[in-house]
Image 1 (spheres, rainbow, N blue to C red):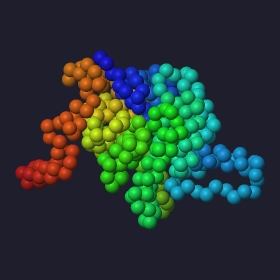
Image 2 (cartoon, helix red, strand yellow; image 1 turned 135 degrees about the horizontal axis):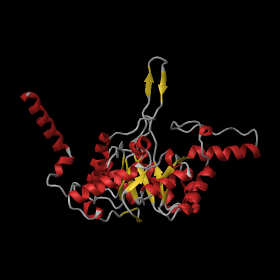
Image 3 (tube, helix red, strand yellow; image 1 turned 120 degrees about the vertical axis):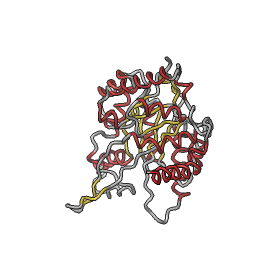
Length: 335
């Protein structure tokens, strides 16, 4: 059975890729992922704030008394609390490249053109096979319109692509007013792949302490539906690789993403919950499904249930919304 796939122009032995997470902070764990069957590993994200923090620490020693760097517009933890600095991140890439046979993908989260490009070059020089741009920007200014937000992302993609020669994937949020158009624009700006979707962490309120809570909730299989829909809609319509991320807890979700048109299925929550060895389970369940449904190649599965391949393309659009409501109403009345 041939599980191989191609992502960002990279030949992978299978479609299961651990996404950016704390699990990749240590070389031993990256090796464990490879041993468990991971086809590639996306390293945890390095934030522009981290890079600036390291640079400022050095600058402070050289030019004591200068004004400190202003806070970034987006909320992130204090840069001083990060466990891995900018230089250590590059060293991890070098070591992982030497120790592993699978592709190592750096993950960069920036907020300015210089923040993206300068460090993207260093990630390439350290030996990364590709870079994932983690576009984690929350537009909170009422005076900033949608075109400005889109332009920030597109400018970042163009800047990075002009600075490096390795493939570049862009991890997008689903909150653009015209997702399909934005996906095409990002691809036309030079992105080699789209990762759908970035999962923004939402705050909550503690009613006893009257504090805003910022905590992590692992994804659930039910969250697959949003990226699944858009991958099925975009397959064959954008000139870029597609990666499905969010909700991959079993081989069933891997299968669904492939059928929608994804080249790879990325997972983090399942590994945090079940351990790195769960990669073997995902692959075994994928193979079992393929055998049952007489697929001998992953390549033959990709896009088999995308919008242009199914009998009812309207299932991904508004027409299906109306039908679902009517079906539910009929069942409710009958009961």
